[in-house]
Length: 378
Length: 225
Image (cartoon, rainbow over all chains, first blue to last red; front, top):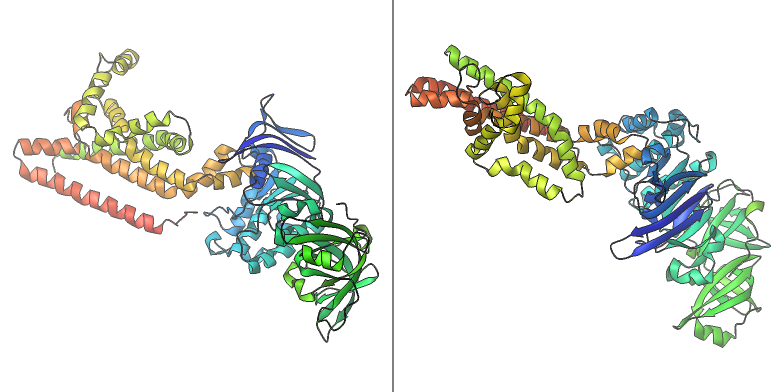
């Protein structure tokens, strides 16, 4: 459990901080830029003092301004991965790892530097000068360096945001590997829904330094009231299901969502692998009858649970798809013309191409059972 | 070369070396503090450090002489402690040189520390390095160019000083007579040959030092960022 309380002064505003986070697996700190996510992380690390602050981790008080307690960062035994790697420029990549290893104490992760090197595939980089590493390589070394110091808690501050898409895709699998192979709690700051949905188990939605919503990632993602926070075009849901068929001829993959099948561009994975995908509300249309002669392959039977009208042209419709929430963003005009009402059975049309391959995350090693049955909680 | 000139050269080198050494030791924490503090005190300390750059050396020398003389605060205490006077002694010269050359050490170091920034120190802290550990293993090596510049400039500047040296040290052969004063005396007594020898030597030396710095700078790895 991580507790952060106090106030932080930003140039434009002062935020009251009050965060209590269960820390296990990867916990995402998510929210728009400039809302204090990074500052929260720095406060947890002791790099930022805040005012009247109280910081506690795992029952250990790290900062309590009321009693004058402040454990300096180097005694907190945490790892911090910065936005741009912050590798020491006068050392080689391997030298950076050694620097951390020499100062490591018995920690929660008992991985040896060799194991870290193996997991992150750092072997070929060790003798390179830091200046000669690409952005992605440098960030991998930085993650390795943090791990080698044997932290009890890993703090990652938008570790992928400085990288282009290709480098991002290069690193994501490594972070997934860490999540699956190490028992290390991670606090992961990001403003990218893709990273969040792919990596995090639990999410804290941050606005103005405070938590406005929290919960399991799929649940938080489909909450209607958070639409404005998540950004209009980003609004959507996360759906999970096992792969049930691979169509080599058309390079398509079928996912089972309850009794129905969602067909999408091919995912390279074995049958039975649970895959998480994000379906954005703007990519879902609604039909009241089974449509014919349509290019859209995914026509799924759903039931409307709620409709949220807005002031503008649009409405958001929340549907129940085999126990999973599905969101659709259509015009209010369509809602009235079709006579949509809560409780109605309708067909949700999802364009296969809307499920961007890059947005298709691996579901890690979770078993199909543990992640099924996401009940809308709006 | 006369024995007098030789001893002046050796004495000058000794003074410059000792000054550079002491100033690196004193200047490092001072420059670090100036580079990182948010205290208002810096608005006083920073110009005070730079003062020797603009003050006529004779002004500085005059006040130092008063301060270091047997009647002065420091000079008086020194007499009580050691039985010797600070003014017109090598120790007095050393104190004066340290003050006179302060900006030549502090300013390059401060610039170097500022460009190291806080990010590497923060990274080191999260890896378990104490602030002192991080300073020795991260900030100093990254700021190595600043150290080279500071040491060489301080050394060279001390060799060339005249006004302060004359005021505080006087012109005692083998004790306080520096190269610059020896040259002055040679000119006064119209022994231009000797003056030429020392002057040309100083000219070549200064040029070589600056050339060495330029080359070292090129060779020292760029460690910005």
